[in-house]
Image (tube, rainbow, N blue to C red; front, side, top):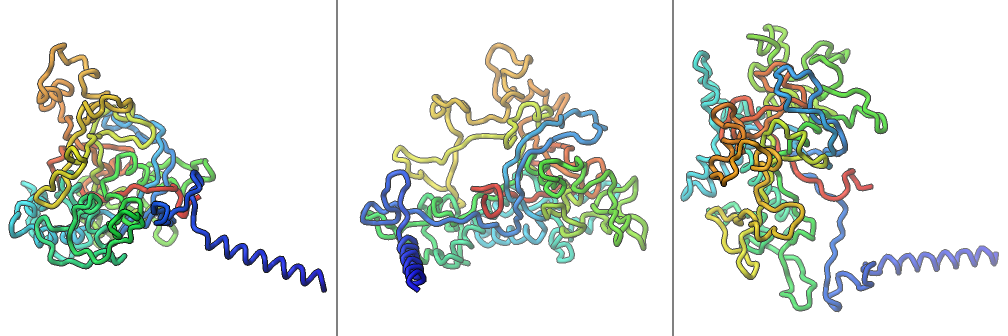
Length: 491
């Protein structure tokens, strides 16, 4: 009986110790000072689990893969040399951006800027005339494809690379604004007008004075008592953006569902196993699993037994998703990515998060590090970093690194010894306009589309188009950086 009594007593002491320990405030393992205590300075540390998944996104767990050619190079471009690279985990839209999503964007621009800056709305409009064909009757698509509700869940087309990037930036602001409203920090503000609209960069820089409901408590004893949300709070999401070419190709293949431990069972051509474009599932045996052109004059098959059920584009949720849960990564529309095109980029780029197209920028601030001004749309203005600011750096010296190792003076024998005018450099490297269409405005787009043969659905194939041009076969989807652990739930 005595031993039982002692055991109960010991358990009681343990329970009390656990309660006391759980009530203790977190302390720095580096200095021993207590966090979140205004009596010792108020350095604030926010509990954080992991990144919230933004609307429309799915997590793409990263890893290593062989990027580039996996099919014979029938075009003989030799522009996708196989190379092993590593892609970090990131988020990506499960579908292409739809007409409905883009109409929401256009409506917002019209409501906020339409009265004083109608050119902002006009600049964002897709080019619906891309549907016209000199020897085909496509006028109904010119008038109806973007705005008719029958096509609302079809991918938006006729958008150039710049328009796709502008949409990503707008989406970033709208998602973060909604998060702050949800957290009780901002009030809903349907009357935003001109520059008085929510912008993520402006808010983080302390330049937003809109419908603030409640600021956060500031534990700094010399502070004002309240403060804005900071990056350190982990409340707002990183930027929506276009995926890089490596990210897009990695996500398209979906090798996460094709591995045994670290062994890839079968190197894929498409987002599915095998070398055919039909399903081998018993219930749907022989059905096409992507929207593409089977052969000359055959966009959708024979009436009564259509091969893919789509004469042009299809609903973005058509067909089966790949092993990441991404729809139409092999057909429907080709998609813009961030990269500037160079034939030999696979030889030059880093093997970790490869990308060509960096132009390093910094916010425009005065001598006291305060934001100088915002533009007419209420956005923080950015400028290229200068050589003087990078003079002691080892990882870069110039802002514009698009031509690094491929297009700059040191990488070409065609440049004369004397200085060359800036507008002549790109012409001397690739003879732009004479023997090629490659310059710093040539942007990569990936994947097959509804007018393509199956060859272009191979994830490793790559093509390019001027960033200011658009077609009826190119759309886009957004991506977002994954912060913290590459594995969902942490590891």
